[in-house]
Image (tube, rainbow, N blue to C red):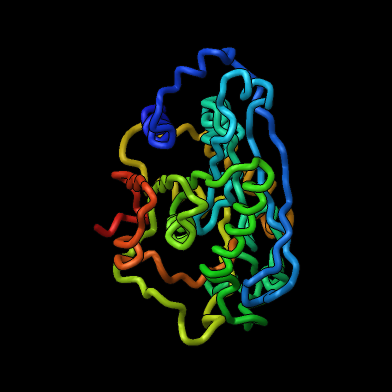
Length: 321
């Protein structure tokens, strides 16, 4: 991410001078703390079953924050349709971790994986290659299956409501853990309906929202489908070839990204999916989610300050003005 964009998003959250950082040394240690938050799932495939939501924290030592008067500013990162939050926002290359960047600015940053993503509980149906689309199954013939097979579960695995439920459980966990009333939300892609939809329902818990590449649709249905779970494919996969192709089709200028950083992200992606990493040359799995809400009606009634950023070369999601 360009440094200017990181500064813009950081300043949007702060809305205040960063002068207290003068009390912090140039390179304070950014800690990593892993949390697991239990939740009684609302995902259709595992309704009322216990799930564990993975939450990564990156923060300065408490003593450093206290000395600079920066305690109490909490950011929760929410992922999009495929890449887990800790992979997207905590890239393991110096200068590329958005979480560490904000932690250095004095925020206590958290990133969460909703059900089915990353290191959170994955519904059992995601372990069956036959629950991929027929096209996606081709990659695993003949190594895992002799030919395309019929799904054992032909429905979307999660819903936007189950995601909101996951987010609320993590927000409550963080509010209790840190003794704060509100948190800031930062989201990417399908994280838009997740974060902004949640903020619209819980303005008392959300201070500000920043969304990169928002998956906004003004005409999206305001309510859930009459029948849930919604018929369709249960989950998707992304291979290394898929990953590289998706990056390259959105390049707008020479040397726009560092291939070494891209590969570091891919390796982190595989590390977040120990089962998918064993499928063929390795894939990242993600549940298919039924989405509603966060349309024009919801936006018109939202009072939480919000910044939406749409990249000029974004070939996946364009902001529907």
